[in-house]
Image 1 (cartoon, rainbow, N blue to C red):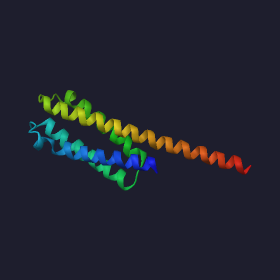
Image 2: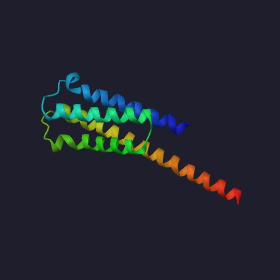
Image 3: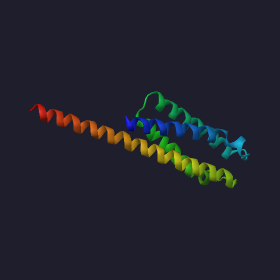
Image 4: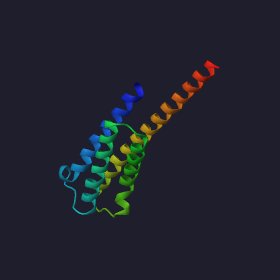
Length: 127
């Protein structure tokens, strides 16, 4: 049950970060163009993935969240952001989203390995 709570908490934090990212152009007065579009699009992607993970957890959602976080980290340099505040926001939120997604994937993997070990123990005890 502890892993389930940790996974759920990570998804709630990711959803909150997605909302902040989506509204960051208005909240922080970011310039239009690439910073605005990146915040809107990646914010929506992270929000949808987080809601999907809260509704029915699957590891692939975390891998996609990890990719979205990494894309958010490199986007300012790939897209040539001029606004340092946009760079800071994208990199900070991208790092947190990527770390949380990696942590969730790790917890899911550990739970899978643990369940396999218990199945093997049960089979060995029956023999």
